[in-house]
Image 1 (cartoon, rainbow, N blue to C red):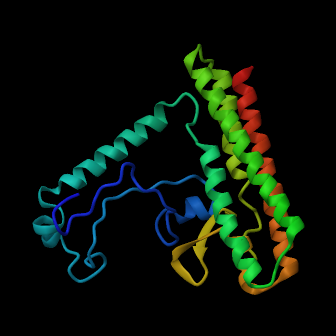
Image 2: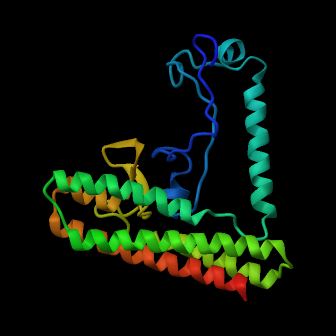
Length: 241
């Protein structure tokens, strides 16, 4: 509900991908370091226009700059949460589900382009499922561990394994034709650098209409996702010990 012109607030904040062309790109797309952004938004066309000025913001966009102050507090809370965490609070299962959903969209595109590869597709399906199961196991183990007595050495081993799991999705030689972009989860869209491209190695093979390349990219990603799942299981085992 609300007065005309107001936007109803959802029960939970919406979550989407980061986009492609901003300051986080070297960390996310090149190094594969998990990155996060947040903001407040409303309908309108002021953003990046000639009217996007301090005066407009002070008088119309955010009088009193209350949203700016709240944004600073949110960043501070997030930094404190991550800095004080005994073990990294990554939700690997949620990541697996999100990326599996992106893969479903790309698979539909591949079929429309006449590029089916059922065997390779099944291997990637299984890899996402394995990562989701590993993530669920990690989350349960993390909760049990934090409910009892923690040990610095065990926590350190678990954190190292979890970081290495996410690095498994980074390919040192990069994307075909774009070697600087090494993350196989998200990269700037090669057709629109300000947008993002999910599972870029697969998406670009589909765009190229190259059946053999598509099969190779699917197999490569499936192997890396299974490796990531194995390292998440190592993180879980570190806590259980």
